[in-house]
Length: 120
Image (tube, rainbow, N blue to C red):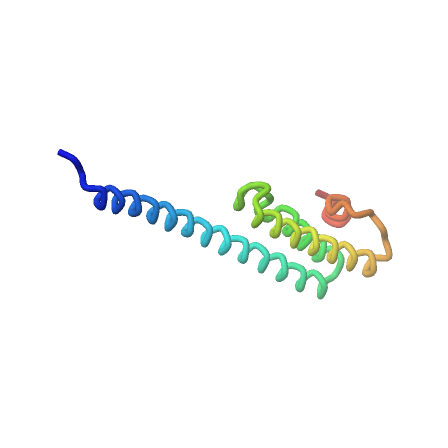
């Protein structure tokens, strides 16, 4: 018994639509996670810029280690690149604040600042 062409087309289109909806769902999840990550970065930046050096270093540490590349986003994906760009921006801003606040220059490596103020 042969399946009419219209039924085969319907089955194929159904599978294609299911695949598209599946991919769309994952994209929505990834974008939502990225939005949450960047929101956290901005919140930590805002708090750091209103705090003393030790607290700013704690916020710097949080931003540095909060869901690093490849944990929430596919490493190297466009969304991951955007999240990591924002992370670097916030790290740079907090370090600039620490330089002004303390009069020290420990370089651009956040770990140097974290070790200096938190002993970790």
